[in-house]
Length: 152
Image 1 (cartoon, rainbow, N blue to C red):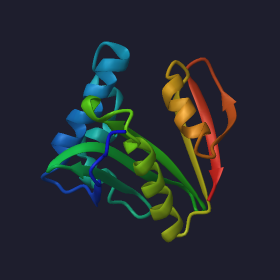
Image 2 (cartoon, one colour):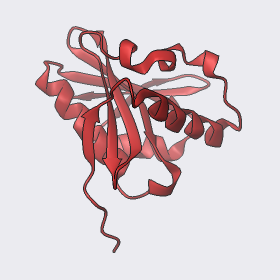
Image 3 (cartoon, one colour):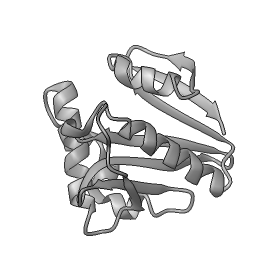
């Protein structure tokens, strides 16, 4: 069994936002085969967008490098939206996404949210399984996305 070094989670800084954006966009390129940054305006200034009240953007460090990202955004007074979950390719399948998910849920509870929602691409079974295996229930889907909820 491979031993995974501990992950340190911190809120993103202005200096880290470009590296975090690159990690997310690289994941999109792997999944979709192309990158269109105009489709994701929140990534143009991660620090500013996710420093609004009720929002937070985290990066996870291992061995001195950013290896994962995740964010919460204020959906309603009691509901957080989990988004921007991404793990660097070389670090996947090690429980890092689960660790980030737990970190985001704990943070959301700490600041007063009682429910988390998220959506993921219908063609990403690994993401769907991650969320289902961690207590998220599907409440609807469309041609492109699966929408899920978990009561914190």
